[in-house]
Length: 135
Image (cartoon, rainbow, N blue to C red; front, top):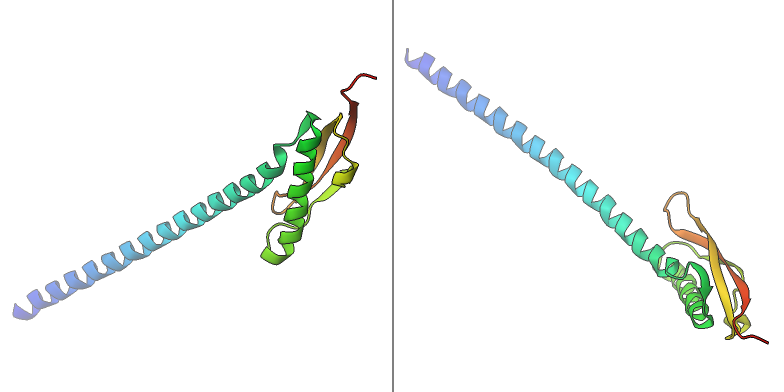
């Protein structure tokens, strides 16, 4: 009888050990999934913050100073993108030199294109609308 009770105690201990190991594996896999989900969310927030630096200039009736700031932001990004390893360079269609911006004119920023993999802005167009000063 003594051997039978020891065998039952040993079997119970093994069963408890298996349950604890299973619980540990379950918690580990759930923790890993939570970490992956957080990583995706952080990546999406980073991409949105990146894109918003340029999207705030989207639309019609943008002033010359707005366009100059946009061009400076793109030039700064393009200069730093290779050094820091952030999203690739941005191409500007239309007016791309701050010296070509006329203070008395309105501008339109449109045609934003996004990278298929990262979702980051890769190009857009700046067009002159015309003068707001009557001749």
